[in-house]
Amino acid sequence: MARCAFCDADFETGPGDVLLVCPYCGTAQTIEGAKFKNHYMIRVHFAQHEAQAVLLDWLSKQLGVPEDLAAKARFVEYKQVWYPFWVSRVDAHTEYHGLGRDATFHDPWPQYPGAYKRFSYFWKPESGKFIRRYEIKTPGIEDIDEDIKNFPIPTRANEYFSHSHAEEYDGVVLHSKVSEEQAKEFARKKAYENQTALILQEVDKIERRDDNIDVGETFLIHIPVWELTYRYGNSKYRASVSASTGYVIESKYPRSMAFRAMGIVSGLLFLGIGGALIAMANGYLGPQQLMGFGNLTGGILFILGLVLFYKGVSRKEAKEKV
Image 1 (tube, rainbow, N blue to C red):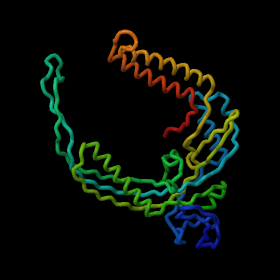
Image 2: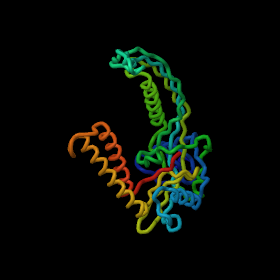
Image 3: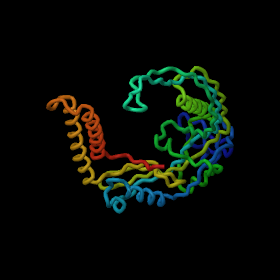
Image 4: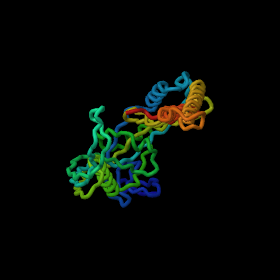
């Protein structure tokens, strides 16, 4: 339990919470009772029934979904959860010196212009700089679903947090277990990693670098997500839909029996053909023949067979494409 430093109300907290939101007055505050001003939210634009309609419409368009899913699906549970994220705006300036691999070509083929018999690699010194501005988000809780963690947040549409707005939808506002300083440190490390990736696109070895990473404005933002559960047949399926944009973050859904059967049969067929081609190419099935062609084509068919077989036997977890 914690006591609000501003309205004196008692409210529940969890282990590890470091930034609290009072459910009575809506004030964001540290565990020590200091008020936190940079607290924002994305407003709800999709009510429960609208989120359910968006989900059913999206599900009806997925490959292999039963044709009667939208008509027979029944929602049995729903909850609006407000997830905390820290957002940091970072300016990164990096100058680097390194070595890049280049090649020298020797002995051209007379009958093939532009083709060479031999080539050799050598190291070439390279240098440059990258100036980038990042907006890096840090989840305020550790055990957040990976898909919710990675879905885009429209931060330009933010406004100051209003607990009464969350209460309109019986929203559950989660406290942050990450402090502002921890979020800034994470943003600094992430910006450093991003700069490193840019450098390694230009050089193979980094010999020296000079980084100036400035973590600027950092604020806490709460994002509303509808956590929905629907029943189809004898099974239940869960889904997450953004309450602010209607974006289907993730959803599990059933496959029709016809689709599953087609996937299993097609997968087994391709697996058999691909395996036979590979065996023939390596002399395990008859005389060795079609070595390069057999291995390549057989490998492609074998992988395609695995994918089709997996689609046939699994309940795929689907995500909407951005």
